[in-house]
Length: 188
Image (cartoon, rainbow, N blue to C red; front, side):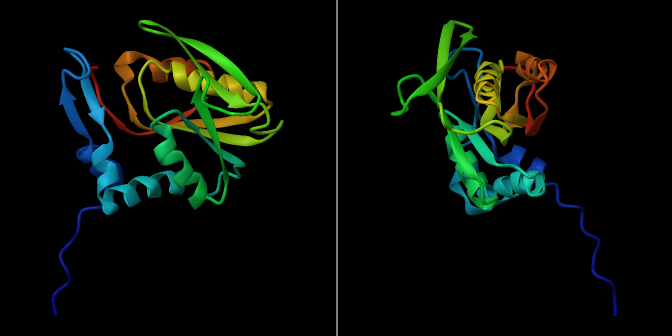
């Protein structure tokens, strides 16, 4: 009787990275847009993606998963559900119906503002912020600031993609936010 053939160890993060589509020159010339929609279209890729986040946070003793508008809303509620946690939406200005706290941040072409309900969490709650990617880091930094203004302890920022050449992950780490990302792409 022969032994079964040796198998290579499965690298879930490499699999996820291989499924991210790059669209050159969108939305403007020179930009390499990293499209996560292929990850969402196939049950296998979506399950592997969510499993990576679950494995990371299953023993983290969290209270909430916060998601950043708009693509963070795709992944964060699924992760919250799987971990049996609440979900906190951090939205663009004017989208939340209750009393809010807001934070503005700089963009390459101006400023933007995000908001959170003033009762989204309480002092001492442990929260992870989730988004699809980290570029300049402004949105995630604004989310961190909002949560901390409400008294939460932001444990980590998490994203599918890091674009380190744009400086966002360095900015976030330099400002005390540990990061977990699944795939990294150089360039813009």
